[in-house]
Image 1 (cartoon, rainbow, N blue to C red):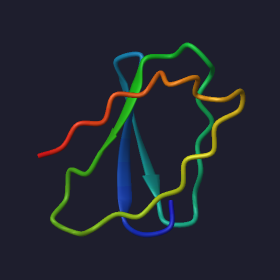
Image 2: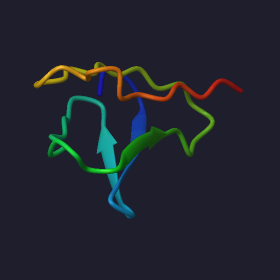
Image 3: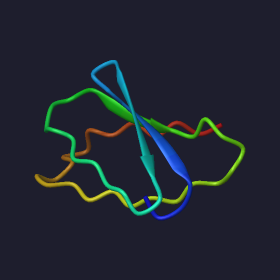
Image 4: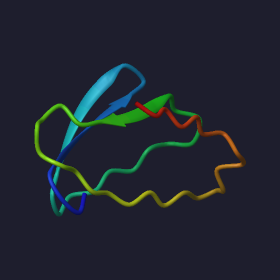
Length: 60
């Protein structure tokens, strides 16, 4: 997490990841990130193996 606090939902479990922390998600896990605060968040996504076009982008 580059900035702020991100909330990762992984297989229906929530994990709060703060600035300077990281999280690994097992391939095949159902997951998404959200921002439950009023502050901006910035984060990097590094996928291995490749995403193989398995992402759904949700725009508000």
